[in-house]
Image (tube, rainbow, N blue to C red):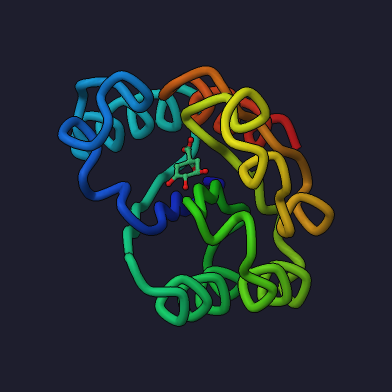
Length: 142
Ligand code: DQA
């Protein structure tokens, strides 16, 4: 059975509380539950990891290469400036799908730049939690 890892980066532990007008009123637990349901329906096992720390996210990406077939990554604000996370994605061979809850291109200018996008298999943004569900489908079909 295919196994995927969903990594959520900084401040995503505060989903539901944090800027609900942008990120919605549901929490991280609900997101994980919904993603797991979709992954299982697509015949995949799914694990979750959240950290507010760049190095911990990099460590998880390194670990993921040993036991997962793909990663869904919401790197939060690290998306826009972490060359270290970009290099970690480039260093591993499994596909990494970049996701964002909000439409990053419709917000502040700095959010339009993703330094990780060029090394990800693809990017999905702007569909709320649906961005993760679409990424599940993408990994199921890869
Ligand atoms: C985000 C968008 C980022 O710009 C922001 O820093 C986040 C969340 C999103 O899911 O829309 O933390 O990745």
